[in-house]
Image 1 (cartoon, rainbow, N blue to C red):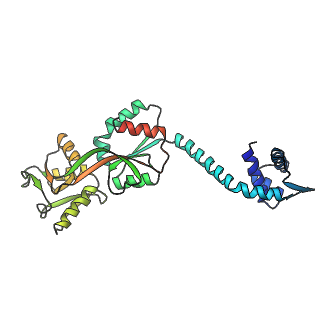
Image 2: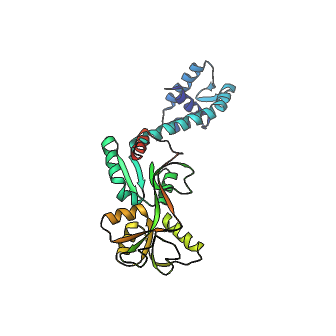
Image 3: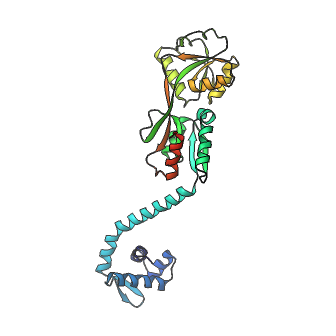
Length: 293
């Protein structure tokens, strides 16, 4: 038995009312506990207990060792817990969470590269809005996140993947489709399809309306950009989304007009991980692959 284990046995005896109580707490027999105490005394070369029949009375040396060992044992238990967490880290899948637009348009090609270059790794890929991604990283419920980089990224490493501007999307033939740019004032009387409450595009657009002293005419609120595109295409209103999604959807056949929104609303999409978590070799490698390195 290791020296650390003998110290644990010793401390349990010191904190127990009787030797039988200590043995019960250690899941050992009383003779086994006595043997470990004698082994510790032999190792240290000092007597720790005065024996009277079946009773053990700690002496001055035992009291001093008990006090001195407290912080060391706490550190060893902390280290043991850390080692176990590394084992659990190795056994669980590599958890990647991405915003919806990235999941549909950008991720498939990069994920195929992950599968090819890391065939022994098990992956868990989830989709969530950017604000939720940040929370999952903060709570160590995700290893890698891909989403909008905002003001709450101070606790993370964030590597820029792509930058996109907000654009207005309009039904084909809309009276604003020929404009060079569209502002909140131009959309004052339009029926708006707004994205989810956590969407950065929504927040920036509402801020633009507020700055102009306008109240938006909200027709519908949707979670996904794809839904907003479908409603605009059906003539149910106009929306403001990121230019990357808008262009990709138009290339895929969506019948929409795209006009730059003013003032310019830049949205940066980044690759993130939580600095407070232990980053495994697998996570580091996956980050490099996703970044295209």
